[in-house]
Amino acid sequence: MFSCLRDRIEISVVPHITCLLGYLEALSIHCIWQENCDAEGANKLHEIFPNLGEDLHKRGEGAARKRETVMCRLRVGHTWLIQSYLLKKEEQPFCYACDSLYTVRHIFIECPDFQVTRRKYFSVTDMYKLFREVKPHRIVGHLKELGV
Image (cartoon, rainbow, N blue to C red; front, side):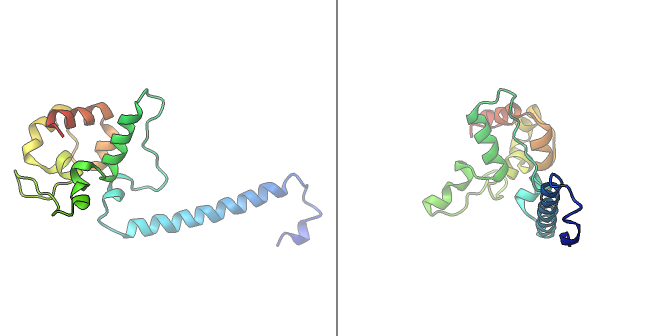
């Protein structure tokens, strides 16, 4: 396509065209990937990260590495409290109060037993808002008060 224009294009422009084509190809792949994620339906990560490529890490706010690690694990649902049954080869834990599966979502959004404590720290009703609107120290404070 560009062979007939090669002599007319300044050399400094050619790298930009190559970059543009690479960018358009990457954008196309990203769009296909996003469509596949959107079509999956019920997915705990998609609920928190509906748009691929979003970065929720709040760097530069003086956040300690440990707190960043805790927040990341909460977002993806990989916590010792909830995932340890896999390593111990046990049944998945249930909440004693309401007999539901013990998940990060259950602790932060669903469990009626934690409602009073939860309201002291935040009042969001879904995971998307929890990790976007609630400050990390409030999320961690909720966990500390629950003793988990």
